[in-house]
Image (tube, rainbow, N blue to C red; front, side):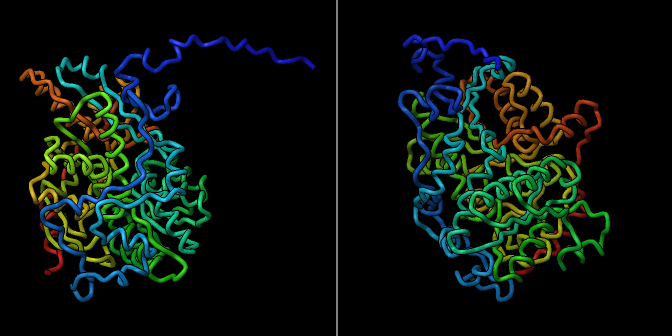
Length: 486
């Protein structure tokens, strides 16, 4: 039998193997395993954080409580017991500053964390800007986005509590993919309701979930009472995250062996995502940079909060002074066009009432390609911070976002998911303003995932078939009118 020939392994000169000999900007900010230091900081290593950070502890005014949908009184922990295990309920309601991350969760995080912080030098050169642009890239996770940061602990806490089945909703499929992956690691059955528009647009996300063992339904579906009512009212409904949440919550609330998992909006979800910002603080400190502007897309708010909240803590303590800018789609402008009021988190009115910026729980956004941003509400904690004046918000049309995505992909090599293209577009605006003024700002972007399963959207843009979608003022007026009076 012939023996396969292999090239000899050559000794690596000591200088060549030293991180200190690599270009400083790349070594300082990357956490990619292809480099000699997996944690990717200079000098020293940035490890996986040992604690999650809770911004509520440091806010001068605490956010309003969630209310029971029936009594309109503040929720008790027992009110959430049909949906969540005890530890997640505790994390949802706590005002503790830091929560320890279980070793079992950190062990899974280490499959992809720390994630790289990369300086976009080629994009800077293309734009001719004096600004520095950094992006914290979460697309290295198994599911390809930041969603694993909360999927893993939610699955672990449910498994530890003896839960057998978890249910959830998903828009673009990033969250559903992440929870499917986490569930299979901890022996849970996972059932997902995916917004119909994204279910049709992104078949490979569905296949990814099914590969990890999940059962996936298009929403609205005929599986639940909520879904059947929605289909009766509109058989061609494109669905929405609010509708999908209604279906998943109904199943969890009516089956004792089943709990509900949520990919955004709630406090414990944003808490888990702060591993992003905690790592990023260390990575930037290692190279002596401090952001002037922190930019992230917002749908429910977990990606933005995960990066921004640890930096807000530093700003509140007087150690730095960045601006915070949330970017949302013009077709679903929750922060910029919504009202700050108590509303349901779902279409059917099954969830607790949350004080948040909302377009009304009946609002059904047009089927834009950033499916993960098609949510009628905003995380109550993000909404509260916005009301306190700690951050700004803007909305951008999807064609400008995809133009920015091509500039990014053709310089940095990463094809972004449609959701973070909103942050990229806003960062390019900021960088071009720096070009005009000569300011040398440091711009930090939340780059929450890759777009490998979103190429149909890129195809539409490249063929000139993508159009900008906006919200109907008449439809918005109608949905705002349905907000409960509290």
